[in-house]
Image (cartoon, rainbow, N blue to C red):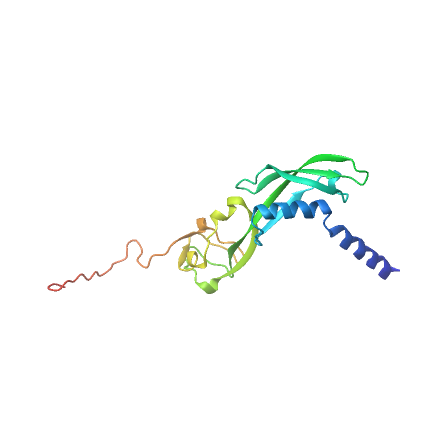
Amino acid sequence: LLASCFSLFTFFTAFAAEPTRVERRVTEFIKRFYGDRKDIYIKLNLPASLKDNMKVRHIDFAKIPDLNGDGMCLVDVADKNGITKNIYLSFNVSNKKKIFVLKQSAKKGDVLRLDDVFVKEVFMNGNNGSEYPLRIEDVSGKALKKDMNAGVVITNYALEDSFVVQRGDTVSIVAENKKLM
């Protein structure tokens, strides 16, 4: 009995996870706006009235996605009785970004090396990615401005250029040209 309840639960869970016709059509419409890029994720705020498998007659943007990825579509649908209605559907588009995560705890002033971090791909809205280094070269060789624990995402605010010579250090400078050293 327990096994049959579990398989019934699995069936309904799999069925419920299946996107509706409206979700599929609106998602395809938005993806075409982005040139069918594979590095985006679209989250629809589907109202209860669109949960049924309705026939989509027309889709248009009511608000083009802004820098944060927020947008709105006007969806013209018909129910199984042929009754049509226009419904506004808000959505959010996230972009895939690479973030760098500290493998082990480090202290303020520690200079990061390639093997001190790992790369993780996540979806972020809009300009949220601007506070994170874009390339591993933007992390490697930089010093930490503060103590950080392992597993913490590295931001540009936590990094500074590392200098071999520190304030107060005594240095020798050699200047030369063809006649003088």
